[in-house]
Image 1: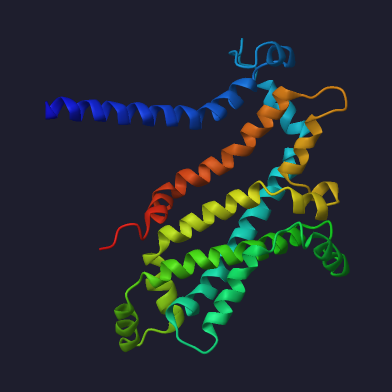
Image 2: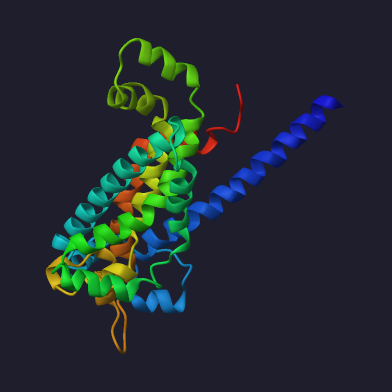
Length: 277
């Protein structure tokens, strides 16, 4: 009897997991399938299957969306912003989590309070600032704005991760003559690699999909990102929906590749601290 109840509970769990998996993957599969359909097919039967596989829609989406430079700009923007965010937030979190100094609590709260400042509130002051710095129309303006908004939350994650490392490691490395930078890069960094991967994926998704700041600061055509170029598929009287889905499919691919490379560390980072040894 116990064996049968156990198998039934297993079946229920598997069924629930299958339903959740279908709900998660259905939008992605629906997006890819609609790339091979026409506007008429989408309007008449939105949930139907494509009648054929015409890959020319991806070529049309690439040209119409100016992906030759939009993809390059998005990659440069994402990689540079993530590097700035990870380096500055991890270095800021190290003394806040592992050192004792006067004003540490105030400095920590000052950094964390930056999460309460939204981009919409400071959008106009940032525009004036970047105009005076002659950064409008360049990727540098979006890099600085997004990195500044991402550092507080990333610092919070790093501080919590660094505090989980036993204090005895600090004492032993100090006795062995290890400097602060050597300790950070050779010991602390490998021990907290899952948190680094989680921050990288989380921030990369935010930067890759960023729209408001890019729309405000990137006035030049050659500096526009993928999210801005998606508007080229929408017209006043008709929209190219197959081109939209094809462009979105090509937009999702780099993010999926990043996740596949870092998924092992990302899952560990999500569960870090959940189980105490």
